[in-house]
Every structure is written in structure tokens, then in C-alpha cells.
Image (cartoon, one colour):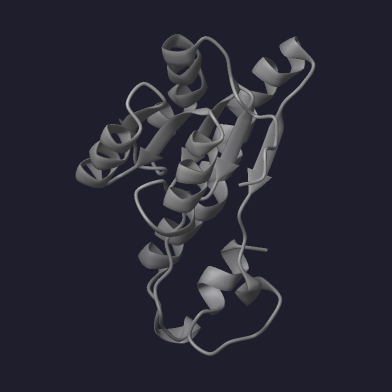
Length: 159
């Protein structure tokens, strides 16, 4: 394992219940980072917290809920005393041709993948500015750069 000198840092990882988000949360916890693991799936988050007692705290949150998203930085600070890293990973995407994708589905994808990320970032900046340090990692997708059939809405939300 590579030591990235992260021990004692605090991170928020959105979309932490599975996939890349879970992998990021695990990798950070293994480096001694306290992680506020955020996702809609409570059960998966609780298992992640159980795997890293004291290092990982679970926080159920739908990225479309602006008030819940806005509260995440303070929840991390209240739980762990500081905030150093944010991994904006949460995202949704549905396969389908653009012309047959409903306006409601397009709205849901952008609310999560774009506006959720922006809200977390907006609320974190004051914490980082006050401590004169902080890292924001936005997870995107290669579909934003490489055209693929049936993922145009998702790709547009990940550019």
C-alpha cells in the first residue's frame, strides 16, 4: 500500500454505497482518513461503517435534496472535527435514446449529477477557505468525451 500521508484527514464521499464511491471510501479509510460515507442506500453504508469502526460514519442522503446536501459539510465537521477532502462521486444514469427520455428523467439525472455536486461544492468552499486548504475531487465519466449509444443524457451531465 502506498502511504499518501492522509492519516488524520477527513473526507466526504458521495455515492459511497457501491462502485467507485465505495472503493474511494475504503481506500481513504485504509489510509487513516475519517470518512463521512454518503448515499441513498442505508444498508450498504451501515456495512461500510461497520467495516471501519470509528473511521467511517454513514449518512443517508439523496443528492436531489438540496437541504440535506447543504448540511453534509457541517455533519462531517460535527462528527470528525474538520473537513479536508470531498469526493463528488454520486451519480445516476439511465440507458435510453435522448428523444425517448422523458423530461422528468433528464431533470433527475441533472439534479443529481450536476446540481448535487455544485451544492456540495458551494457549501464546502467556506470551510476550505477558512482553513486555507482542501481538496475537491469530481468523478466524471469517459462517456462525456467518447460518444456512446444510449447514454447521451448521462454523458451530458458528466462533462
